[in-house]
Image (cartoon, rainbow, N blue to C red; front, side):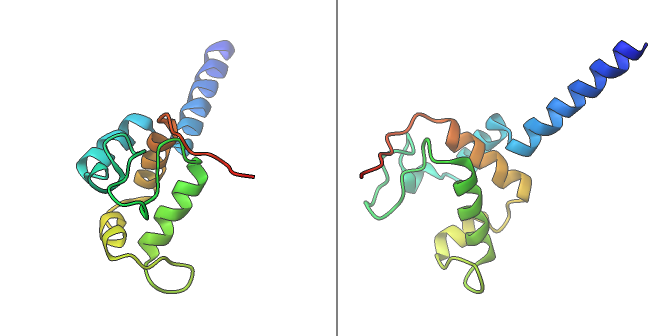
Length: 114
């Protein structure tokens, strides 16, 4: 019985960690629902305007932070962009984690110039 309880505990712990990091499939569904590709490109690497960021392969924690600051809006520690603010307002914190996990999981062509 104790092996079962230990295995169950590890399973629940792993599930909780995965949820904390975000769910890629749920994030994909949200990105499709909100048509993020319409500005950031079908592959999230080819935005329709060069001033829009490439999102594919971006660091998950950066994406979460950016989405939360857009949700916060124009004010203390927020970002001011009417389109992005409108897009993220309905998202929960878990939704934001899920979208960030999905975008992070995509192959990207981000480069660091030194």
